[in-house]
Structures are given as structure tokens and as C-alpha cells.
Image 1: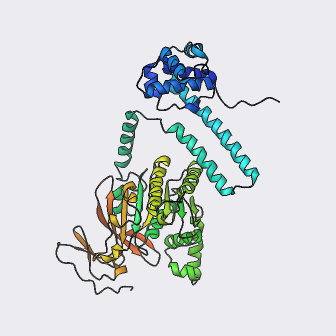
Image 2: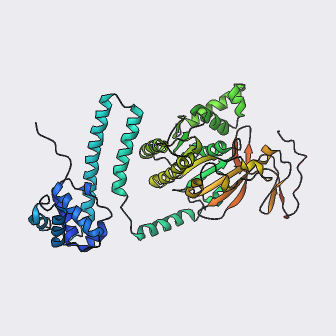
Image 3: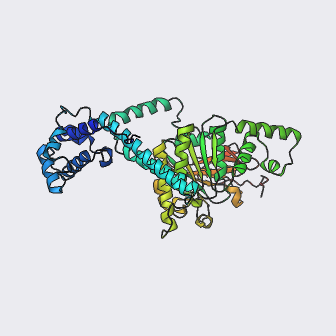
Length: 466
């Protein structure tokens, strides 16, 4: 029975090491993408160790300095002696093809790591001592790390990014929307839609409509326009989310659906709404506990299999730390926040994360949140590209028109969306309408009056639903 040798190519390994020794351009252009484990043959790995040591200490790399460094490291014999160092350069004329050779070694390294991690997982699976879900998560994380190690150093020429700028400019020129339309025009005009790789924080006190706004966006993007998405809901289960989506889609009173008091006609509308929704690629994870590793692992799978266009996390403060021992809640939330931003960049999709606010909001006269109200961590403010606060005046029994820029808006069904951080543009407040019966957000469609900067009109004539 023959022994299977792990995937490797000694000739390519020799070509890479030889090019690093002979060609300074190859050396300076490639060292950020090469690491020890790319080399399967030990002697080539040892030679690379010497090259890296010289490079890190700003020395000149050539046959003689490499042999000398190996001798000082006590590894000259392991490298095959001076003869071994000389041999790796004998077939190398130029390092012009080193990028292609490094890519070959990277692919072979990933295959070896996949075999190693798979065998390790198989052993743990047979042992029966490891939780199956933990095993899947650990295995996925190790595979991701191997992949990240290969791609993390692959810097791109500035021309690549320049081309991307022009492509995005051409795409946005006609519509003004760079990303995915949210369905709320003024919000889209302000943030250009859901843009990759933004981390968008929707924050508010309980009952203001964080989940409702995220579901309204999902209805517009994923139900009406077929954009695949992933929902990580730690607060509500999947049935509750689909019921609320159905209420929005069918324009049916949510409570009527929930208590079953629908007419025959309404029941038909509900069945049709559910039939429409279940055809869409909306993937819901509704476990009551999850950490950033769980979300990252599942999101990577969904991106590969279904090309999800964005992610919703509801909500940050319910997430757990990967290892919470000895860590404050602030540190844990910081890790979660940073992890969500990295996930958006890695998958090149926007991430919407909902967040609670501290009670300090209630102490202010205008009840409008500010960045310092973000609960448990200033890192959320730091990592976010967009922070959108929600405040519904009717929740505080406000009976006066609300001024927003040069207009004032009737408080009935009004939700003030206060964009307090916008990494890409202006911060401003925008008016939105919230229909409580279906829990749907739309463009503001209530009464509007000019605002002179002095007087705020009373609105006592309105029958408030308090």
C-alpha cells in the first residue's frame, strides 16, 4: 500500500526560494505574501527562515549572506549545506514569475491544511467527547484562518482601486444609490443605500422600532427585489419574524394575524403573503445565544452558497463573547463590534447591527439619542460607518410638530431617524413614517409645515393612539 504524500511541489518551492535570493525585485515585492508553512520541504523552509531573518534586519540577501546566516542559526546542515543553498538558484534566471509561483504554493498549502484540519476533526468526531456544533464551528474557524493567512498579504496595486472608484461612480451616477436601496428614499439619499462594506448601526431605546425598521428594509430589498440576506435574530424567533414580514407584505394588522381574528379575505391575503415570502432567499438563525465566531462561520457559508447581499444582527447586546472569562462586558462588546466590521469587509457586504441605548436618553427634554448613549461600548461608535438613531415622539406623548431642518412634521406616526455618524457624508435627521398596525417604516406621509426656526405648532387636534 503506497503512502500518500501531502500536496506539494518541490520544484516550485525551489524556484521561489531561489528567486528571493537572486532577484531583489522579487524579494521586496513578495515577502508580505510568503510565510514559512508554504514550504513543505524542510530544507527550503529553513532557507526561507534565513532569508526572512536577513530581510527583517534590513540586510542584503544573496547566496553568501544566506549561507552565513544559516551557519549562525545552526541550520546550515538542515538546508543541505552551502551546496543546498546554491542548488535552489541554479535554475532561476529571473524572479518575474514569482507571484504565480507563490499562488501555486498557497493553493498547495491550503490543500494540506484542509487535509490536516479534516483529519483532526474526524478524530474528534470519532472520540465522541466534543459537541458536534462546537466541532463544526472550530473546524470552520481553522479553515478560515488558513484562508485568511494566504489572502491577507495580497495587496493590490492602486490602479485596481482606481478602477473600482470609476465603476462605482458610473453605477451610482443615474440613481444616486451606490448600494442596495432600503425602500426609504430620504435614507437612501443620505447614505446611498446599504453599501459594502459598511457596518450600519440602528440604535434606539426599547419599543422605538429597531427590528421593525430592519424588517421593513428586508421587505423592500429581499421580498420585493430578491436580494438574498441573512438574519441573526437573538431576540425573536423565525416564526415571529416571518409573521411580521407577512403583516408588512399583505398590509394586514399584525395583532389580527397573531390572534387569528382574520376574515376569510384577510386569511387569503395572509396565505398569499407567506407563499411569496418563503420563495425568497432570506436565511434566519434564531438561536438565543451566538458569538461573533458563530455568526462569521454561518455567514461565510451563506455567502458562498447563496451570495447573500447583506446581514442583519438583532441585536449586539444579546451576543456572547467567544471567551468571556475575566473580560468586562465592555471589552466583549468591543470584540463583537470589531468582529462585525471585519465580517463586512471580509465578505464585502453591508452588515446592519441593532443596538440598545442607555437610559440617559430618557433624562433629556428632547429625548433625542446621541453617540454617548450607545450602550456598553464606545467601540460601536468607533467601528460603525453609519449610526442611525430612532426616536418616535408619540412614545413620549409629544403633541407638537417636530422641527427637522427647514420643515416641521406632525408627530402622528413620525419617527425621527437621526444619523449621528456618517463616515461618508453629512449627519442629519430624516423624517420617516411608522405604521404601528403593520409595524412598517416608510417615507414620511403625514402633515408637514414650514418651520421658521422659532415656533413649533401644536397638534392637539390629532387623535393620538396613547
